Image (cartoon, rainbow over all chains, first blue to last red; front, side, top):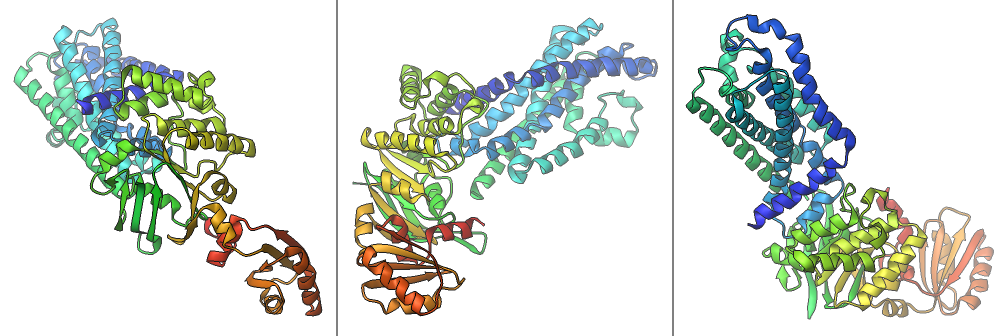
Length: 256
Length: 320
């Protein structure tokens, strides 16, 4: 119980601090909508190719942009941890009886919540552009997939932050994994149009799991079992990276 | 009863940097104990071990009856830790910082609200309680740091360099605050400082730390009285005072001569009588004197006496 309440208190602290940064809010709101508008115009005629399962690229793209936004913001989450580390905030928490896990989980939960709110905005924008995405059930799955993928990459990011403890290294890692993971997935383009070897490799990519889950309900021919399978994989990924972050936290403490 | 018992702590960073070399002292419940020494002497490392942030390589430490190694959670409930570099959240308000700290310590409801309001009031922060900490002055931020360490009414408070980086006015205000704190609640305070004046003013007992060990311990008065007579410092034109030291050693009424670069520290029975004698002897020996100061013993002299080094010079050397 204390672990849960401490996680919520620590998460609320970060969300409150972010809510006081107007520029951050504007970018978080505008950027995903911007992606959706830009891509849906740029690639508008792409659905004339076979394999998309829909003639509306917006319909195809909305879950993808939600996942992309979530996974990008998750990958950068470690920057906040480094700031706490540099400012001595982390050490102050460490001299209280607060659970070490809560310090990490609070941060991961923050990324998940922010990503879900962004996904919600993207869904609303999508609806205005004519996307349906499988109706309320589809929207719920998209929100869940965004929640999990953001948390999963946030765990990874915090773990790396606690190990490198340097902004420059953190930025380098986030940059390095960002675009490759994006392009090794069917986020922007129909899976059947991707070369077979890339299709195979993409099955190892958590971003692809999130895309496949999020898009499941929206496109015809996807079964609940495969969607559920991808959601389970995502949950496993989130659990794994959260453990990695907690473990990195212990190793950080040992170096103090 | 002893609130803090430190017994032979050792800590080495990496392979070469020996931060603590068997440090040993104890602090009685309710007293203000000052660890005094230059930067790098091992004060902060000691406090960090006692606050459960760092583990010692060897030795034992008991805080409020709990072993820091085997019962860290119990120690954390009993202590407040005010680090050298402020650990408050700059993007939050003063009140929010205190509330979160209390919640992490397991407080809640009206008990927590009341305690936070009380601390904001006591530390003169009530007017800015709902402003972001990044708008606070250095002195206000430091007062918030101390208040943060006190939210859960700890038995032991660690203050690591509480006034470093403050301007003289804010420092004086902080001293008043800390004196009130020490007098009021039944609180044990372990204070580290490299300001001799601060230890002299705030601490009931002082231990001088040098190279990871305690070199001497006692009340500031005891330490000063243990030195006989006045301190005389002669600044020479020459960079080396060794030869002048030889000259001064033979003089009547001069007990102790410590050459320190171009400076010569002497301990004499009566400063006013000794100075002409010393100057005459040095002049006869051909040593050119630039300045002479005479002073009643200070903790500075205690430090010099026990380590053979000038406090400020030691501090600069280690900071550099």
